[in-house]
Structure formats: structure tokens, C-alpha cells
Figure 1 (cartoon, rainbow, N blue to C red):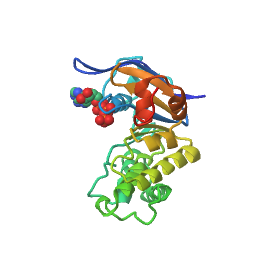
Figure 2 (figure 1 turned 90 degrees about the horizontal axis):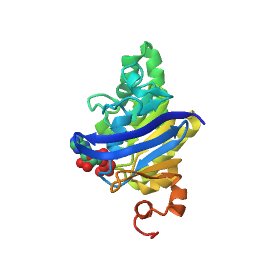
Figure 3 (figure 1 turned 90 degrees about the vertical axis):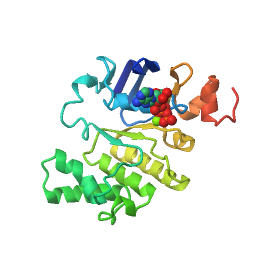
Figure 4 (figure 1 turned 120 degrees about the horizontal axis):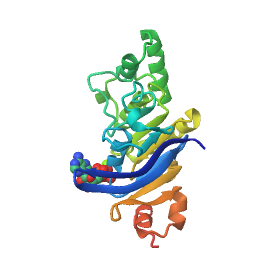
Length: 249
Ligand SMILES: Nc1ncnc2c1ncn2[C@@H]1O[C@H](COP(=O)(O)OP(=O)(O)OP(=O)(O)O)[C@@H](O)[C@H]1O
Ligand SMILES: [Mg+2]
């Protein structure tokens, strides 16, 4: 078992306002690791810490055993080590899908125009968007925008992919399709995936392990496979969350 990310006794706050205390967990290579919990518990905040958008003290977050403080400024950390699919897909609206996916390759690699074209075509076909190279984001559906965002996040073949609420705003069929795609990526490419979500269907369909951030106790109160937790957790908040309030402890 290879540990890709290690979080040790992380405290999260905005100024004096404490969001969570003493978070410790490992993300293993090749798993789909879900960060779940009630609205406002601190999921997006945790993602900001993991992405280095919010600064952290030394010896708190490690990537492949190295303190993240000494990695965030190394060229390639964003893009090659980690890829991010932000909420909403966040594509450039004035660029075609092909141009969107090509941008990180043009910025960070010495590849020729022709090589970049080939990679762009490959990434877009991987997410089921072959033939849509010349479309603009406004000309495609929300689900397709998410998939295009995913193609862009994968442009540089990152080792770890992060998603913030990938299924937000999608109908259940498109959300299922995105879940299937995420599972496929994990299985075919072996990429490690960290997802913030409160989509229950998705949690049970794709989660290898979940970590539950409890808004009341301000720390992690459960960690395990989703089915394991639903079957055997004796924490009423965890059970209420995973069963949408239909199961009592
Ligand atoms: N920039 C900020 N400054 C101050 N407080 C913030 C900031 N961003 C978030 N918070 C607070 O931190 C807490 C956690 O917010 P966060 O956005 O991480 O929650 P979340 O779990 O992602 O919620 P949701 O499921 O609704 O997206 C909330 O109480 C929120 O009000
Ligand atoms: Mg959030």
C-alpha cells in the first residue's frame, strides 16, 4: 500500500474562527477518497488546504512523504502532481474545448503543436467528447462541461485528481455518467482521486473510503468504506448523513 497524501493533526481556521481540529488521515494510491459531511462543516476548506491555496504549517500535509510546503512552488506540482476539477468545470468561455485542454500543455510542456493536438484529441475522447473539439463551453451541456473540465484537469497526466462537488448541478443520469467515468479513470489509469461530495448515490457508487467531518465535534468522527460505515457506525450523525435520516442508530 502506497500513501500518496498524509495529513497529520491538521487544524483549520479562518482567523480566530476554528473550522476543524486535529484532522489525521492518509490517502492511498489508486483509491477514490471521499471527503463528506454536512454543509458548512469544512469540506471545501480542507480541499483548499490540500491544494495549497490556504497555507499550512510544517509537518501537517505530506505528498509522497514530502512536506507540501517544499513542493507547492516546484514547477509541475499543479498539473503533473495534482490536477483539479473545480466546481462548475471552470472552462474558459472564450476558448473551444480543444483550446481549453491544450492550454496547460502549451504552458507547461515543450511539446509541438502537433503533439499537443494529438494529446488533446486523446483526452477529449477519453471523456466521451470526441468530435466536440471546436465547440465552445456555452454550446455544450452541463454534464459535458464537467467532462471537458476533467479532460483539462488530466491534460498533464497528474498522479492525483481533486474534484469539488463533481455532480453539483447535474441531473441524475449525467451524474451517474460522470461517476462511471471517474471509476473508469481510476481503473484504467490507476490515478488517485480525492472528491468532496454530498451526493449519496455517488458516495456509495464510487467511494473506496470516506472520511466524515463532523460539524458539531469539529473533527473526523468516522472513516471507512461507505457500506461499512452505514452498516456498523454507532455515530448518529454519520448514520443520519449516510441514510438521509431514514436509519436510526
Ligand atoms: N473565506 C472564508 N472566511 C471565513 N470563513 C469561511 C470562509 N470560507 C468558509 N468559511 C466558513 O468555514 C466553514 C466551513 O466552510 P466550507 O465552505 O469549507 O464548508 P463546506 O463543508 O464546503 O460546505 P458546503 O457543503 O455548503 O459547500 C463555514 O462555517 C464557513 O462559513
Ligand atoms: Mg463546499
